[in-house]
Image (cartoon, rainbow, N blue to C red; front, side, top):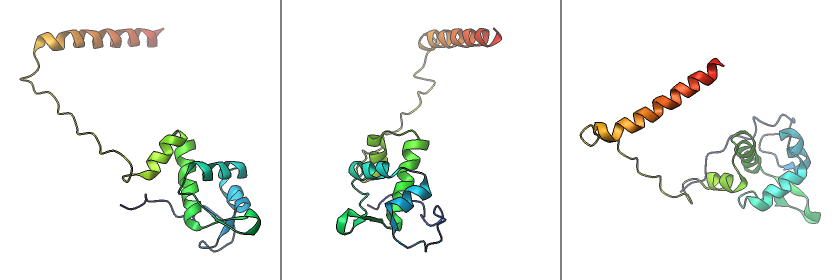
Amino acid sequence: MSAPELPASGTDLDDGKDPAAFRTIGEVAKALGIRQHVLRYWEEQFPTLRPLTRAGGRRYYRPEDVALITEIDRLLHKEGFTIKGARQALRGKKGAAAPAAPVPAPSAATLDNQSVAPLLTYLQTIRDRLAAALDE
């Protein structure tokens, strides 16, 4: 099972460096508009985000790390995922449960007017109340 497809990081960074170059936390933070402490927190929360660290703890992000950060940012800030939900989404097919089997639509033979009539009346009441609220 493969890792999720991530966007290319070279298109997001316009810093004059080669797209394959390593970047410091400051460069990544500035280029993506994400604070450095947030990036460090994400490293704790997302096990797949592991930049190289040199002597003194200096972080160097690879292009795939930058792509992962971009994806995390999209999930959290644009899609509205929680940290846990974003972690599961990034895990993709590896850790996700099998998708639920689609529920077949009931056939006309299984529905009778007695079971549908109350539901239809209820839905029409809701429709009428909404229409009245919009007219006010």
